[in-house]
Length: 262
Ligand SMILES: Cc1cc2nc3c(=O)[nH]c(=O)nc-3n(C[C@H](O)[C@H](O)[C@H](O)COP(=O)(O)O)c2cc1C
Image 1 (spheres, helix red, strand yellow):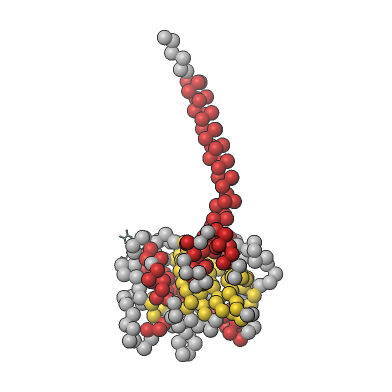
Image 2 (cartoon, protein in one colour; image 1 turned 90 degrees about the vertical axis):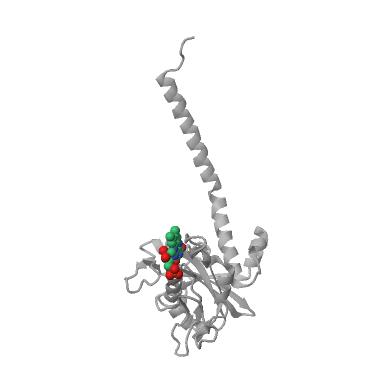
């Protein structure tokens, strides 16, 4: 039997197959892009709901139930430098992560300022507000900072006194499961609830310590147990909380809100 295989035919089959596959893969990526974006937004909403305390376990909710529950939460933009609400930019289309990477909408932090190791700070942040009868009930602040292996992205919720933690958690990070990944452990996250941020002088006193907090210590209400075997992630979490509550983060905004001047 004559050999029908030639180099040209082999190449033709390979090229055709590669072309078909790449069209299929890029077609699928394009077709699924909007679905992916929608799922990411839903995941963030689910996390905000969990931290807000509005819903006991948002993981059990359907897509529609999440969207319904989220109606009680109002996103607002804050100018970090002035600490005032920004009502000029469109809150629905504003993307804080994108703003943090754009030189026009963010500023490089000096080593001294950059406690959270985020390199650039966006000018505007998206916060989430829960109100009851026109009064602030819970304020949810986006926070992020470097742990050991990754930037951790999460939310810190404050009670209406703006001094007490109402909830805390991360929705994205790449710390090691079982070590730094224990930031997701529900019992560790629960330790944050009720902790007091400021000491009597008004300075930030909330801190993740190495080891366990002695509940009888005079400052126990400000301190959080470190994660065992994950001192570096714990330090990162401590630094990022300090950064975002401080003068370069939401400090000016919190001060304005307390005075009713945001
Ligand atoms: C494979 C591997 C993964 C690790 N992942 C983490 C981590 O995610 N977070 C962390 O703080 N430490 C992690 N560590 C441990 C750190 O290198 C360091 O030993 C630890 O933070 C010290 O914590 P300790 O003082 O509580 O023991 C990891 C170590 C190894 C070998």
